[in-house]
Length: 252
Image (cartoon, rainbow, N blue to C red):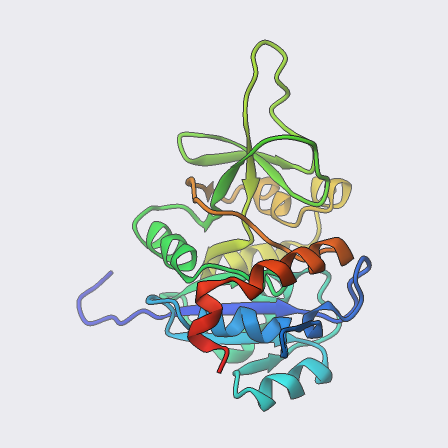
């Protein structure tokens, strides 16, 4: 980075109302606050992010964000996934090539601000195009949780199945966390390429990045992911939120 160049870190939160498993989930009530607002307020507690912006095609979500004074960007309804939505938003906002984008999924109401900072720091201190952290995963297979295979902190493949298959010895699995760091050039290349075969087969958008030759880095994060994909996830997250210390920092 040349002397005098000031970069910014943008936290972009893609959100849509038409979830197939839990319609309208960005506005689900969590102890008096909509889920998307929890995500945004927790992201604002990051020490690294300069701006936090919700990116959506829903006027309902926009209006709720305005009520809570959360910046938002209205995107088109043509985006087929969250990565395309933040790519479109980055162009509307005017994010420059020298900046970094942290994609924070809108269905993670218990996201830890420290994990956001860790992704931002790892992205800026390495030469990867994209960064996705993981946590170790054990037990029964869950097709809603994406697993990764990596070597020397570089992701080789992703799948909804538990991979790599423990054919010769037992292993733990690496569960993809829903915080993704992007260089702007990589996000632009992803957006311009269009959907790819493996992406469509597994319904994992970052497989597109691997297929078009982008380098995705990873590192181990700690804690857990509490993404809300169905009613059971919602009820679990409600219980956890009630006892959450970070919630205490912004609930009033």
